[in-house]
Length: 504
Image (cartoon, rainbow, N blue to C red; front, side):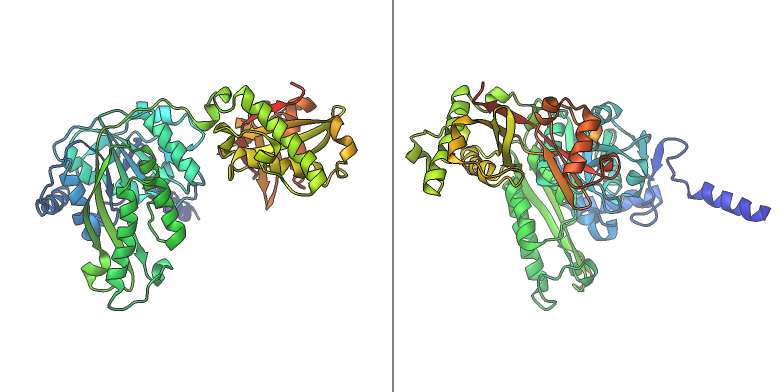
């Protein structure tokens, strides 16, 4: 029995991550993804680089590099590395997709790791930069996720050969929606400087049954069709087209594993950035077998970083969005629309009501219309997402609040003079990591759990005199969940509102 305990203890000791005792991540890729011998590894990379004819690009600020084992993708990656050899960057940020850890709308930074080690060198982390990033709710800290992720580590020996000394910011990127990718790009843009190089680590099309992706049949045209699939995505990247690249996934289902790192990069790049495709290859071409094939792309981006102060949508001054005149017109529009609808059973146009629509009123925003009668709620319906112009949302929801709020009987024409209209124009919703990040009086909130959801506008809690716990309890009950459902396993999204009413 004692011998068994000793064996278990030894197994635990020898399976601990290599970074556990010295805060240094000793890459587990050595010996499998690339050679474990420093001399053999250097010789391999030097050979790849020597095969490349340099384009001599000036002012390279970012690269897209593949992240397969060097036998397959090393030569393609060398085309990007060749363009930065001998150049000076004080900081390199590697954005690599998470293959093994689920992280919804999160990016992952090291918690205790201070340096990354390969057979070639030990590269310190940029702890000052990382400490600034840690302040944001989109960031999670997890050393094990870093240790397990090859997409970041695979780029390091190449960079060590090309640049020598620099500080590293390793970012494992989770599964992001478009707005979160843009927000992370804004965060990074507020922190970088001219001496920053960004690497978006990504392989491109993963074709075959192994990857559950066979958009074209396996025949003599497969190679050509896979290349077209990849090149169409590359064109979106070359145009620095964030929306075009993002939409391409919906159109094709293309399996680009580094989609989110590339989206973050595209959201960061200045308008005058020039993108160059350096090399393209596939494992199918290398092996002569396209049954299962992965594509590799190397791209360079030249220009100059434009450091931007962080100003997220939720932080913009509300008065910059709608003027007092806009608010008065929207309130008049809501009331007039309902009056017209009650008489004609159809929603009018603004022209029919004699109300001018300003450019601010045409902005896409979510909106709620709330009706009060003698100080008591009489109806409230709206839409969270910014899917149509604000003025259209207000007109539609004015009718819905009066006639389609199931909690109340329909408003009658006789009641109209006694109604007070209130409009809440909403900022885009953004997920938060914890209910603890919700600010009462500032944030509107959405709870989601087990397929149930409910929403409160920012003004609900102050009007009722609720604290955060009371608010979340009532929100859970509104969603049809147990009163304490908010305490564990629930997801939260917040938004802000510009609230104005006829009373004011």
